[in-house]
Amino acid sequence: MLMLMAFTGCTEFAILMSGSSIAISQNVYAKAYSGVDMLSIMSSQKSIKKHAYDKMKEVVDDKKSND
Image: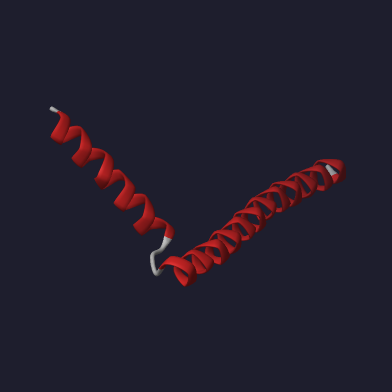
């Protein structure tokens, strides 16, 4: 019975720790994206999303004009 409790506690701890590492890695990616986005805004006055939107709109408009 004691071993079962020890292994169950260990498993819960392992699950907890694996979830926190995912959260930490996503947080790092979010910070990196925010930093690159800020540099993009400073250099071009447009965010990464705005650049992507403008490019997609340009591609769609070109496709419509060719049809």
